[in-house]
Length: 466
Ligand SMILES: Cc1cc2nc3c(=O)[nH]c(=O)nc-3n(C[C@H](O)[C@H](O)[C@H](O)COP(=O)(O)OP(=O)(O)OC[C@H]3O[C@@H](n4cnc5c(N)ncnc54)[C@H](O)[C@@H]3O)c2cc1C
Image (cartoon, rainbow, N blue to C red; front, side, top):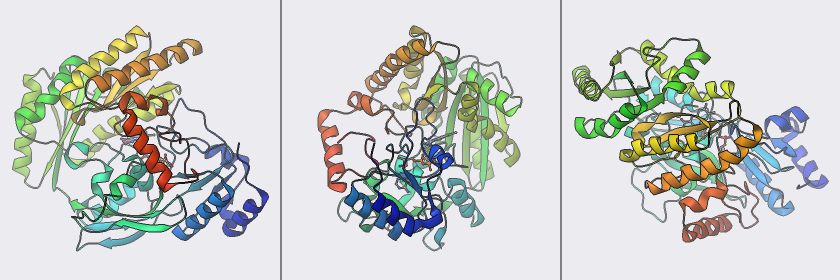
């Protein structure tokens, strides 16, 4: 366990004063993220920097004293990325949460990394624009954390994950140098694409201190559809057909099995139509022409009905749409209440393989006698298959979960997919990385880490060990 040497402690104390925390409650709160099955590590100090220069100073000191530093946004991560090294430094970016510039002419916004994602959505909306990044945690996660994980969410199908909206980054490198990658250019092939090397690097290659995001014109009309189906198989079987047969790209195409619906409705204390149905799909279409949007949702609704939907409900005003989305967005929280011990996965496969993934994963759960639910971003092939401890014994859970996870990851790989589509590798999936990547790829990742961080002080032990 690294000790923070007295001289370093004094220097940090001089720099941060009240923005340095060492009391037990604080250290406990910053010892973990939201990964249900991972225990945390108590850090030595938590620092709340306000500028890139302060972060640079901390990293220079950390290199000198060889003390590990873990950047942290809101701690909503689901792979242990923000879990610090025991006794190390946590750099919380929460207080760096301001807008730096709103550039209406270029449709770009520049913000600090601690800004909550939904705040960016709201600012954009005030200007009639759209920030299309939309993880289900948007009310609590930070944009810095979204970038570090290349967060996905509900609009990836049409607009891409967080990285698609990121054009420029100010970054403090692990050595303490401050640099800028990218900018406001729409096209840029000058050197390597460092912006998108940093995106998804899980806080291991640099600390993001400013972010320039592209905004889009906000579509004038949005309509959501809710389609209940008799069984998971019929619901999920429609997914690959919806886009192919309609020629329409919905902005969202989400899936919830019966158990997910029940959990979320119980948690919110609301009723849901056809709550006994085997599974529900939620679709959303957007556009500027009311009639064109109506044509699109009718076409999609017809395909659902033709393929076995029990009914198609249309949510064409903000109120009903929000009610619908609230249920979908609450599944993860409801799960926490139902069974704090569970393991939420985010394997991702080509969309056409979604039915096989769902079938295979329920066979895996049955073979290991584990309770399971499935929900998620079916339209982009990313489903949250979740194993739940429920009433099973500690021993059964531990032994069978390990094996079930390995089988699930192998299945995803076999189907041409990957072991994480949006939550990242962090600590949680590190030992399973060789299922997904070959030796050459892992060697490159380690090599890149060594070039950026010769002393391995920035968020060590995440993604790979070097
Ligand atoms: C209820 C719930 C719903 C969720 N829904 C989704 C979803 O729909 N889609 C999705 O993709 N994820 C989802 N997540 C996971 C999580 O919200 C995302 O991974 C999010 O991007 C994490 O942001 P954060 O600010 O909480 O980051 P943290 O958890 O604090 O950190 C995550 C990683 O980012 C690094 N980091 C944080 N800030 C910086 C920075 N400024 N510079 C460099 N590295 C940094 C940390 O070191 C860590 O490795 C959900 C989580 C919960 C609890």
